[in-house]
Image 1: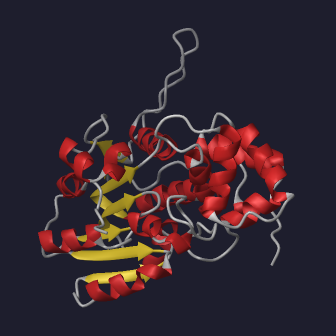
Image 2: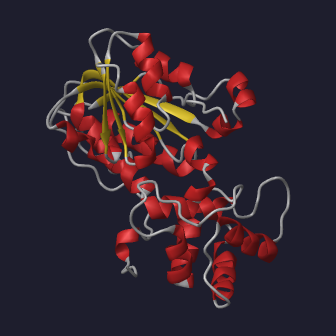
Image 3: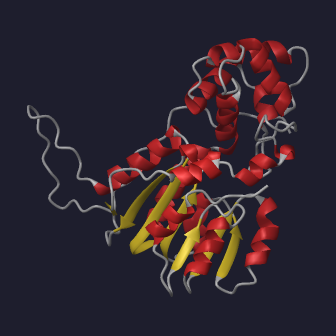
Amino acid sequence: MRHYPVMLPEVLAALGPKAGETYLDGTFGNGGYSQAILSAADCNVIALDQDPNVRARAEELSKNPSFRFIETPFSAMDQVLGGEKVDAVILDIGVSSMQLDQGERGFSFMRAGPLDMRMSQSGPTASDAVNSLSEGDLSRIFKVYGEEKQAGRIARLIIRARDDGAITTTDGLAGIIERGVGRRGKIHPATRVFQALRIFINDELGELFRGLVAAEAILNPGGRLIVVTFHSLEDRIVKKFLRVRSERPASGSRYMPVAQDEDFAPGFNLKSRSVIAPSEQEVAENPRSRSAKLRLGVRTDVQDLPPLDSLLPRAPVVSDYRWAA
């Protein structure tokens, strides 16, 4: 199956590749962005990915001396670069089509396989979660990370089903949900539950938040932060991060004004306040891109920015639990 680097023309337009610059592709995947960037200018690309399955593709591109690959989560970009600065950071957030297409990875109920969902292939699996967590925790995960309206009902279905045996496969979990809540329209009733479990198991929102902070630290003045997201939870974090880092703090109400910080200087300039969407042609050719959104910030020369409060929803993360070995 063909793999599409989502919104590639828009990413390249936002990046504006130039000879001699260095770019960080934080979500290497199948290498679509990295390859296109290397072809666009005589530049350098550093690619990151925590998925060991991308090594073979990375080795192919490593024949180009301008390309370097590091196996690591993108949230660690500032640590692995050891003080090196870059001229852009590009992030394509979420699960890749390559991962979705591999049934043995357990990301999609469209392909039968083990209920895994781990991007790094280490730590607890989605099966561990559905078979170990309480009804309340499962409901909370589905509601916050999946925005699932029937979160409580689906959590109860899972608790009852696992009394008859462990839930270990993607089609097994999808079948429990479909039989329990029914199916209306084109969207499978397990869609949001699978999204929520994937985000939970991989701490995707925490990874995104830490990655944005790390990108801010390694970008040169004039460096571009380009982020492509696929659902509202991700986009909300990116939007708020860029707004907080680019706007003067609010002045309060007209009845209780807050003194403005005369020394305030933004860490990012926003080229556009409107989000960039994929073209109609791309959506027709690659339906996965239909929910994609691109946001762009340009780094200023301000270095000492105040710390950020957490932008993350309050929900359980894997590290909250004791997991069976």
